[in-house]
Image (tube, rainbow over all chains, first blue to last red; front, side, top):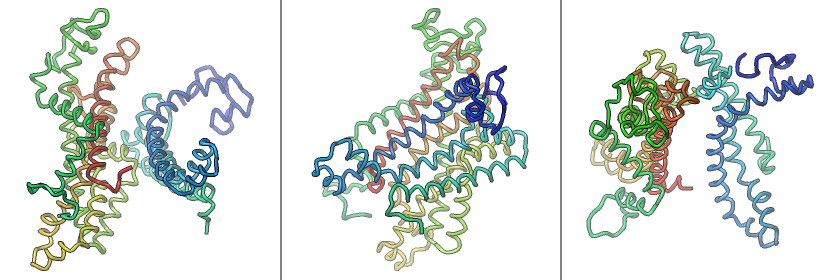
Length: 171
Length: 297
């Protein structure tokens, strides 16, 4: 496993999530090292979804801020902060959560470029190598894994709708 | 024709042109149009504009910095790469490669997608189900991975990369066209066309498709942007353009090892990709605001 820890950093592997393992074994040197290795790929990978989510939130907020209950909340004399973040943002969140769910799935399987550059042994790089080596089992298994995760993420997103907006209840 | 929405103008203009003229008021869209125009001009006049041959190597001019940095010369305005090739010339010729990739791959997706989508939306029923489920299957793959699979199967070259990108883009066009065709089919003019005895193909392509052009134009422009990006990504993974083709993604990939010693070799192709994609995206957003009021945000 290259790219995730520096050479010479000892870490007892429990879950194979290095950050989690470092916290569980109270190995602060390894935690610092693991975080140091994840920060650059994480920033790279989060930039594009950030723009997409920001645009989605903007258009959703514009839609919600036109509603009558926002006018009511303002008329009640609530602060601008309360109106924006409690009344409006919560109601604007549904399409945003959907987008975040989709982006999560994309980041899982589609991060081939980022994983190649940072030598990060992720699913995207694994499948890219498999395609190059004609390793059909890995391609099939990887595609199935990505598809399954997409389904699970969409389920979680659907369940989150009920949390965000209690009027949508699970039937 | 949507005569009800048409402005009262003395000359009989096409309603699409009327809507397009609204775009001039949108400053970001005009900025996008200017960038795109510059990009297209660079691609067309590459031999005139570029100061050097893009593939000519020069052992004496390896890794020269841009002219404003120490050691840079006016001979190579943006410097040279590790083989002494002029970066500015490679960027200008790279615009040509990117434009060809974008036009061919999006053109392929446009033709096949429109065909499948319109047949699907017009005939409905079982055929519609079969075509749209195939489109869903294509959409279910991570798109870059699908392109990689196609290229790995056909062999790495620019032509195959265009094919791969085109295939992955078919579903977007098919879905948009199908939606519009389903909507248009309910309108009176289609029934009138049927009543006068027009054949199915005539109704689809002469009557219906011209009325679905708005969303299609928007999708085409936005697809140009992502096609340029995807072609660069494929070339970066050495699955697209092969050396010595001056392709932006391949230029970045090849100069990755030089990033600390000679950052400009990698930076300028990156800026070129950024500008081209930004231009098409701004133009596409502007076109969407002008042509497709349903999607306005």
